[in-house]
Length: 153
Image (cartoon, rainbow, N blue to C red):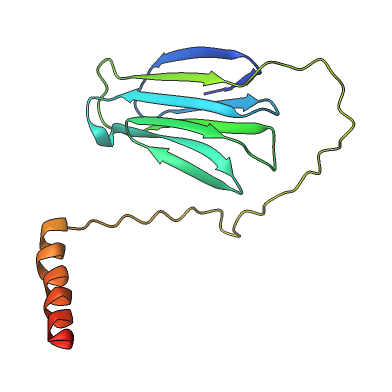
């Protein structure tokens, strides 16, 4: 799908989602970017949202992302909504943003642009760690408590 670009101001955008789709939005202003993405999906693994937070990094969310971003390297925030191959039935995305108002005064300070270089193979690494909290506490916290009692006792 095409890139939709929004500059300054605030608004809301809603889209019905189809499977295997990428929606792209570019938000621009030199102010704080307030961005909220809500995904209403039939199944949680049907898709996700990714919002650029600067320095080549993205915040990912599978339901709701509510961010305030002050990016010191760029006036732009990218928002991507990616759907996978799960069947969709009325699944939708709501994007709301507030980019501040365009200021009419002229600024005497120059913005120094910096760039980040993508990795050679242009891949992103995502780490997911599942922890069984009850088992972790029962096993490791009790060991630590028992060993500290032995040291002091």
